Length: 223
Image (cartoon, rainbow, N blue to C red; front, top):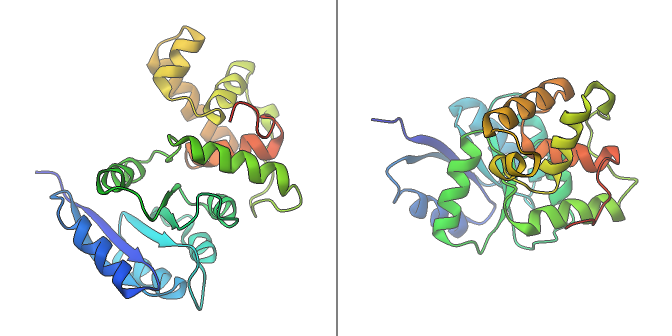
């Protein structure tokens, strides 16, 4: 039997925390091990309980979700950001701080379950078109505000790896990239792994942010 995913819920509204906890508890492969009412508490709880994933609200007192996400970077704990608005100005910052993806708070139950599983498995949550549009939009309108990570150097990539990175940033999945480039899906997976390793990135979400920040992808194009 597979060990259930250990989850923490961080939101400053008690009813929201309870609602998500109750919803997630309906799934046999999830277990909610803790909750937090602000970002500072979320960091403490996560460091103590070592969950697989934390559902992180952005706007919280004491410490916001962006700072909490940054403080959890490098711990191996995945962060799935929750936001009320699809163009929340802080979502881009949260992704830059290390969040693996984001969801709107009015998401359906099934979408929430799927998102938790995808992010916990190590993939960035990039499927929704709104995610790509948001990253592109904030890369375009906020050129003076970038993530705290050092700028990536794409010259470390081969031409084919650069091409794969561009397609990742366009939101294509591995099978779609394989079809576009007429190669096997396994070959694409190898390219993706090498891209992440060479650029010091954790997942596809960070790769998308890096592609926009580096200028490889023109903001808004194809979004």
